[in-house]
Length: 273
Image (cartoon, rainbow, N blue to C red; front, side, top):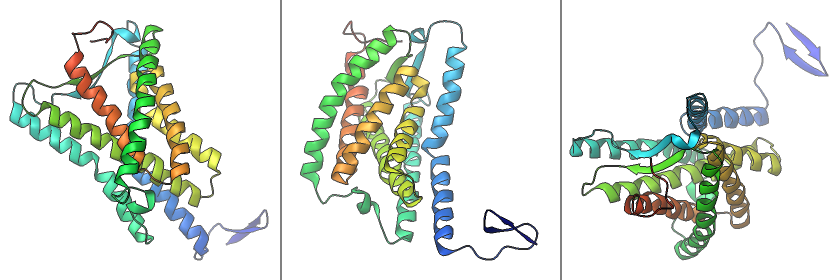
């Protein structure tokens, strides 16, 4: 049984006929995007929100609480700990493989997003410049946000002092960069464009998503990463490549993880838990 609604035939009882090809494509892209985000950074955003609620409802100021990024998974058992660290890094990259699979279905690839080795030196140069600019501003913003009580104390690493500590920190930084820039910038903007979103709305969605999964750090972490998301989307649209963004993000995280490991407790301006 069918009825008319605003000039469109709507099936109410009988089995509906096949959707037009354009509708089928949009529905597939919508469902696919939700699934990719649901197993990756969208789920991280929900987790970060729950963590933030827990922090603000806990007795004590936010800056007196700690948000630890790279923690030991098996204290006192370094080989088991290493196995867990490597497993976590590898499994976190599965959504990137999923994105590559979905792109192949439309006869595209990660190269379509500018994630390849065709322009290594421009990508490295641009990424280094971005990291230098954002890194210095990011540190200042974090210290200010924590000082105003809007941020937890971020502990970038709490791994044991073993031989694999720094290699794992570098791998963790690379994993973060690849996952976030491929999914939140390249893939998401492509899909939102295919779904008919305006450039401004897609820019806002990508940036808010980036801020959301950093909310576990506090309001400062959310706002700082939201601004970073705006900058990264604008640069991606200018260059058409996520390569420089992956380089920049990798350098930023390597600097944060390794820098904290080397400087924590040795310089007065760096907060520690």
